Image (cartoon, rainbow, N blue to C red; front, side):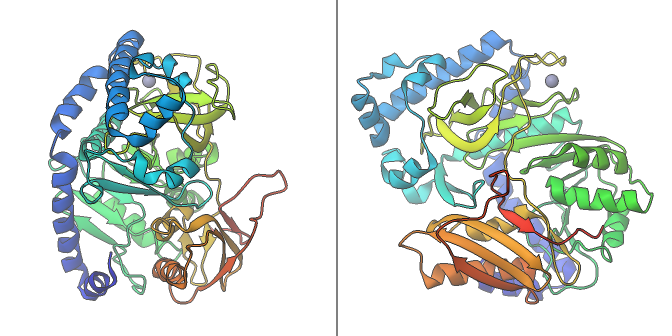
Length: 468
Ligand SMILES: [Zn+2]
């Protein structure tokens, strides 16, 4: 939210804020559920029962179209294919993709303009930002129909969990990254309503042991069918319930955007007395996995994109082998991402799911393994909500948040030559909006970031114990 709007919003009474949230949701609704949404939704309901052969045929058909289009309208691919002495007709199947090299994040930054289709104007396309696993922001563009496709995929995930999403849908509680309750509010309500979609929106920024009973009371009162949030945030509520020896019965819990650890799944399922459905939609819109009621892994949305597991050189690995996720969106004509190498690791399972759907199953995705921050006033902050202020700042190459004590955090940055004081101030402002004025934010530019003793990178390192 822009600062003037935020100040205005913050000054409103909670009931009016809920009306503002509802009004904003109505605006978003047109974009998300307009256009091709209904058509894609119907298609995905039908294609969920496609055989493996039918899914691959569909992928090959869409890939052939995408390659032809990219050759004609996207300078980067035209040059690439010429350099590789390839014609569009050389790439007709998912196996043929191997003839092209992978597209890295660095290449997207470097060749940004030449990756845009000449048929789309930069100011007319949708923009997405990813902070990636190393906190290095990347901007990508995508066509409007992909917004519809994305929400149709989400709708299919909800339908697998037995929840009806949308305007006339079931009651849903959401606890994600939006700042819907001003940080200086010390008393409940720590939530607002989106009346249009029947949603209770809970703040992820007021979670502290003193406040959690209020959250639980409101969840009991609102009585949603499902709770949808980041694993780390839902886990905070579940762990609290477990510690006081209580349960809060829900039909399902949906989680996404972070690695869901087994210990989190167990506690969440125990405390909310239901099954967890974990879905994964990459910010680059190249991969969407959803979990069915057999909970055997994430079914890859094979209609959404083509997913390969590759070695470091981009060579495709066999099923069962772990490597980097390389994915191709089949529906982004504004900025085709073909063989985009994500920073995430996983493997495709050998087994078919007993539910009867032929969509391949992805093992757990290894992404961010971060710590939760603890603030002076006791609030617990999920790492996912801290990614937002980094997203517009493309001058940041890598970042890391370190917390040694309750007084504040140190943000270590590796930056490029375009990094300015304005960028630094914007980052401090964005983090302060989420952490509050009592948390000092110290920005350091460094040449290298800290790794764990096993060489793993952690984006958020907190040395403080979670007191829940
Ligand atoms: Zn299944």
